[in-house]
Amino acid sequence: DAKTTQPNSMESNEEEPVHLPCNHSTISGTDYIHWYRQLPSQGPEYVIHGLTSNVNNRMASLAIAEDRKSSTLILHRATLRDAAVYYCILISGGGSNYKLTFGKGTLLTVNP
Amino acid sequence: ETGVTQTPRHLVMGMTNKKSLKCEQHLGHNAMYWYKQSAKKPLELMFVYNFKEQTENNSVPSRFSPECPNSSHLFLHLHTLQPEDSALYLCASSQVAIPGGNNEKLFFGSGTQLSVL
Image 1: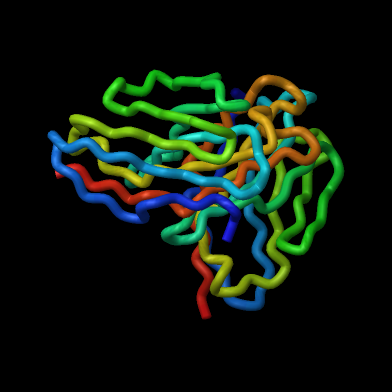
Image 2: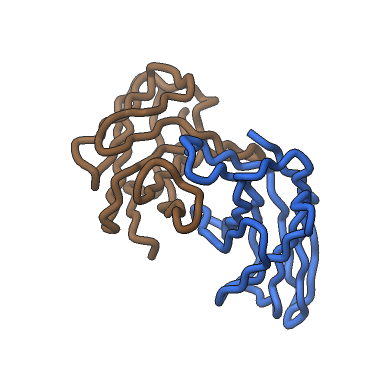
């Protein structure tokens, strides 16, 4: 599986935007970029995914570099409830790769 | 509430005990998964079931025995566990066992925190 690299931790202030980076230099043409987050004492939850174009949903935005070797998850206005571990994952589209491989993720701390 | 319910939320067991973890999904999905999350380690995939058939066993020791009687229920039977098996055990489901692509996502339960004494 193609690997991803994320910073171990990041810190933000409440009400400010947060940009969480992810490097995936060995991404293949059919790999989708998925983001999940895990709040304390809960299982991971889906945040957003994309292939080539930038994506927006009610939770976040995903900005994908033109060469697809990196991406950034953007939380437009961080709240205390956004404090979680954020995972960037590559998944082969339409193939048999159901082995969602989670790395260590980025621990986001949000200061009031 | 994600539609995936795990019981119990917490479990303490001795090494000679036999216990079972239960997972139920109310999403109409056909694939279910067991993941293990040890302290300070990434999530590890243990088992995958697709339409009640086991399609993945990620080299899990035989003291962990999964059971999937139907697409909505998944069990993990535990016996003669070791202290190093203490971890958060997470169940997840997806429409089919090929998450990814345009719409496929995993939905996780809140997990069972297991302590083996």
